[in-house]
Image (cartoon, rainbow, N blue to C red; front, side, top):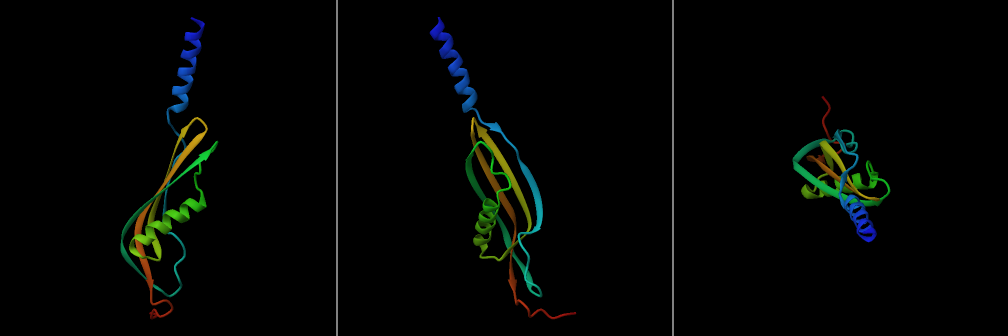
Length: 122
C-alpha cells in the first residue's frame, strides 16, 4: 500500500511537471525595425512573417535582442528588403517545470530603401 501511494505521488508530480503552463507574453507594435537612411525613398515590397524559438532554463527569453534581430532578419530576407515597417512583435512563452519555450513572431511590411541621398527636396 505504501509503495502504491509513493507511485501515485510520483505520478502526480510527473504529470504536473510535464504539463505546459503558459508563461509571460507580450505583443507590441513598432513603426519600423530600425532607422531608415536620411533622404531615401522607402518603398514597400510586401507582407512578411517570421518565427524564432528558443529554449532556456529557469526564466523565459522574453524581449531577447538576439531573437528579435534574427526574426527581423529572417522576415526581411523573404523579400530581399532593407527595413520592416508597421511591424507587430508577439512574444509567447510556455513552461514545463524548469524549461521555458519562448517564441517570437514578427510580421509587417517589408520595404526597400532606394536612391539613398538622391531624393529631391520640395
